[in-house]
Image 1: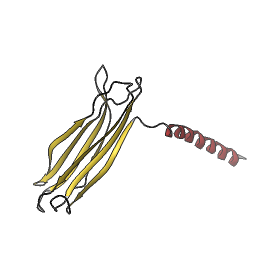
Image 2: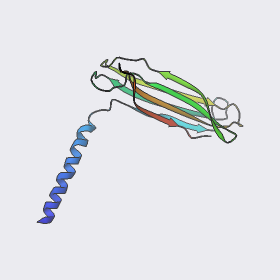
Image 3: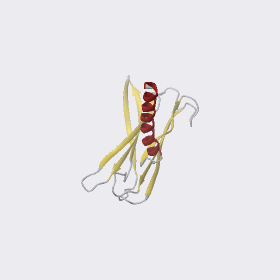
Image 4: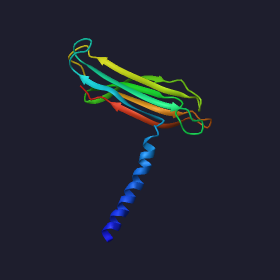
Length: 155
């Protein structure tokens, strides 16, 4: 009898833990993104000596005036090179979406891609980095809700 009671209690607990997860699984997140392409190769490319490429996509839905939803997305990408054993950050490539007021039914679908084609076989180790941030434009000041970032392997 004790085993049946223990098994029943464990089953009820497992069911109670699974139900909220199943309900929340049907609610799409208001923002997110990830890496579409990230690679570095010493073959091919425009000049035949390889290239490094990083492409990220992001999405955000701004349709609820009463909750924290992203109004705009700043995106920053850089090319880093290893010179004399130290990673040196190159100049940044930036993009920012238009700012939409809260409650404006708008879906951001932004993507920023960076690519660098090596001009010779003798090039410093190179990699790309990128960061996408999700910001809410509030009367009391802008608030960063989240950020995602990625970096390619170096070649």
